[in-house]
Length: 235
Image (cartoon, rainbow, N blue to C red; front, side):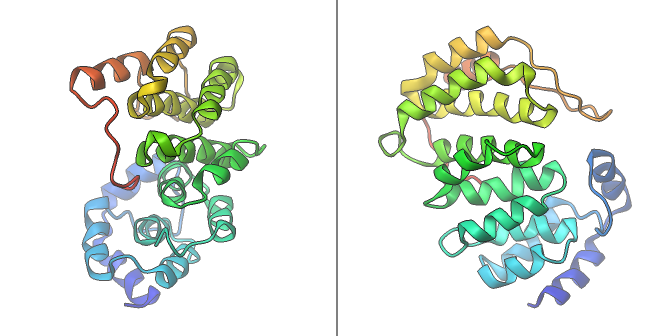
């Protein structure tokens, strides 16, 4: 399939109510309002396709850009290409899901995440924290730099309440994810979560809520998910 053929198919899957909901969350034209379940129907046809994913992302159509993230080949995409993607990720479905999920699955995801969290642009900083979170979730503990992750937890504890809006949200995700996925850092993450307390994020009038890091970590431990790694960051 070509990018144009996929855009035609995306238009057929467009749903007015989904489009209205996504616009309330930050999506803007051009896009059709395609449900993720329908995006995955197209993904079944294309599988991972590096060249096609780049073409789709460059359309600027939010549905196509999100699909590009699901379709991207983490073994072929480069840091330069992902940096271009994150700079074009104008709302959080792209900057906190599609792009960092791919970045986290690359061999260079950790370094890219560290670079992005130093950005002055809110969406890129947020993408960096998600990348680092999911990098920890998909890689073995013995392959992680535990000392740096410990320092990052300390940084979140110190800076989260003074950080930008979406950065607060992704910092909170970072604490939760590392606390669940990295056994050696669970106690450190729980201590940080306790000191952080309630995290306030402006959800732009939607019903979304900020999860309690302490509750999420404890629930994961109770369910036997403690220390379990994800096969992929993408879902």
